[in-house]
Length: 96
Image (tube, rainbow, N blue to C red; front, top):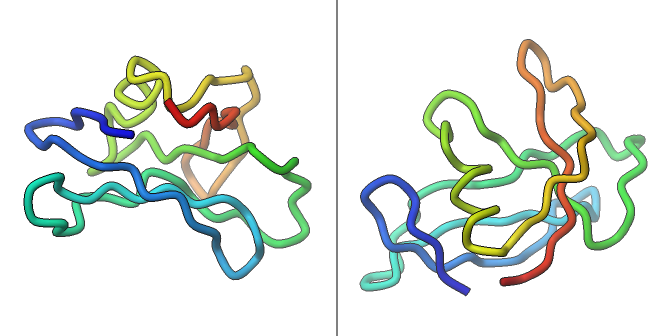
């Protein structure tokens, strides 16, 4: 599955954090260099159903949620969770 994020054409890599929560990373489709970590890891005590992921859409990741949603990779479910001073959006991973 691919997504255009800012000026990069990216491949989405699905993996897991040590907590077991879903993680999404973006790498350049041409050379595999890392572009961004699209997700954010919340504490292991946070109840996240399998197939759901929190997306980081602030700072250097601004626009990430829109890019992933438009590419059909995630679907926001309308839940936001605090991650320090910012809020992360819970999304269902659809895989594009």
